Length: 127
Image 1 (tube, rainbow, N blue to C red):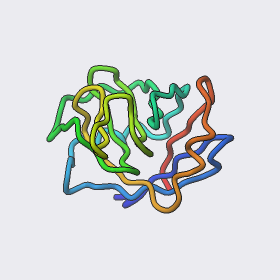
Image 2 (image 1 turned 180 degrees about the vertical axis):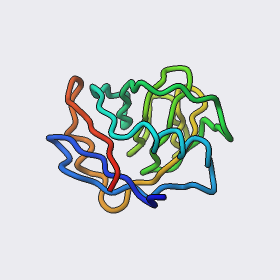
Image 3 (image 1 turned 90 degrees about the vertical axis):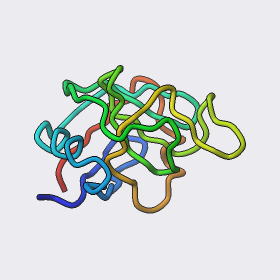
Image 4 (image 1 turned 90 degrees about the horizontal axis):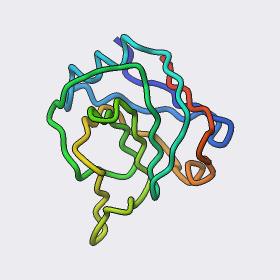
C-alpha cells in the first residue's frame, strides 16, 4: 500500500501528504480505493475543502486538528486540508466545522495553500 498521496492544483503545484494509516485505517483505505479524486475548492478561513464521490462513516473523528492535516468530512462527503485557523478556531487551536477523519498530513511549507481560490480544481492522486 502507498504511504503517501499527492495533492495538486494550479496555485499549490504538487504537495506530498504522508498517510496516517494508524490513525484511521478504514478512511485511508476508502480514500486510496477511490483515487484519483478531483474536486472544486471551497475556502473557509485557512481550510480548503472539496466534495468527492466517496461515502465513509466517522472513524476516530475529531473537531480539533493540526496544521497540515488532510481529513475526510463525513457529513459533507468532502476532503478538507487545514493549513491554519478556521472561523471556528480558538486560542491557537484549529477547529473543524464538525468532526473529521484525519487520514494524511501535508509535508513541507503550507503557505501556497493561501493562494487557492474558490472554484479552483484540486486533484488528489497516488504518488
